[in-house]
Image 1 (tube, protein in one colour):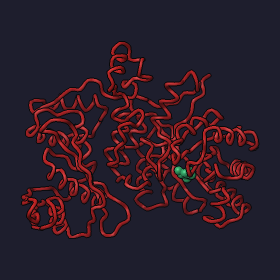
Image 2: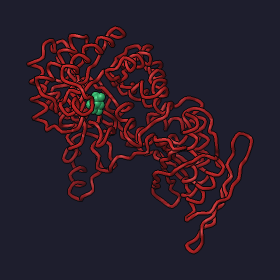
Image 3: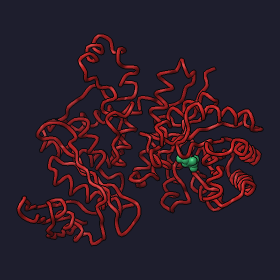
Image 4: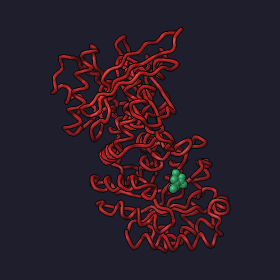
Length: 503
Ligand code: KIV
Ligand code: ZN
């Protein structure tokens, strides 16, 4: 019988904790639903002790997701484990993920603990977690720079205390595929009781080898891959789920390993994460990048026309890249609009569908043809839940290369309209300054980007901003789309503010 590797997705934990990738509750729920639809075996929904908001989001995910196991991370600290369990206890299938570092560097400088103290701590806390939950994962943080025999001792301790999955993370992305292969082989051969547990790998991408290392780990006997959509994660990121899954799929005769992921959902999940986080993937990103299936040179085009397999090792259809570009316009009705969203894989609730349809109609008045990218952008900017606190009522900008720009901005909040004037260098800065005067909070623009979504003179553009508000350390991402670049920029700023205050 074919081996099946479990896919453990940590987009909502390792991915979400990386700079610029934070998500609000509604967005986390959308991602969790998508991960479930993809067939992810285990969703690491967050780190419950990190904040009450994180714990509440994990609990909401545990409430709505039925077929994937829901997992929360915890340090070897009792209150972390309590918080993790409280967050996931209502899940159909729950897992507590406990971790402690085992490398000399981490033990000495981060934990300031002796190896014996580390062993004692693992024994106590894995057993503590086990009284709540039968499904316990233990991660030996920085396992790939740990002394091999000490690593085996730590894992054996975790097994005796009740761990059922043992993770061997390459926390700093240091491994070469052959090395992680031998490490896992050694651990398998020298850890008592490991044959009754699932071995997991969790590879970071600092040297660009996270996917190759994950696949080598699978060849050495790992039955679980920890990964994220688009490879988002700490520093250079984690192993990318789409790359791991498509490698297993495309090279099935080589790996002889399957997994439960519905590959046709991959493109949609990738776009969803790009839209929500505002972090685009490179055009050359394997599987989901804009050029991943594009054939530019004449020789390649000729080959592909004769037989796709000349230059394509997998098909765009297999990862769900839409092939038939249907163009909507102002005469398209609600039915055509809903059908296209369904074809693209979106199932929105009624309230959100209504909001997106209103935005679609408004856009159709300004733009002749509405393409899939336009629709996706409208979905991305429509609020996931709750009302928008501020909406843009009007703006008037006076700008030029010889004057200081001025902006008059009117925002609606409930039944009231607030209007302010501000001046600054450039029209966008002036507009943002006027918005700040209305909102009355300390808002700092940390990052700003603007791009055209489609080609043509009436193309929509999307502005993405990252803001920090009232001295907070976490960015909030705002998005705005319009056929007018100033309007898109102002809307993105307001969107960020609304998201901050609605959370
Ligand atoms: O990279 C790492 O070691 C982790 C652990 C918490 C699994 O993210
Ligand atoms: Zn990690």
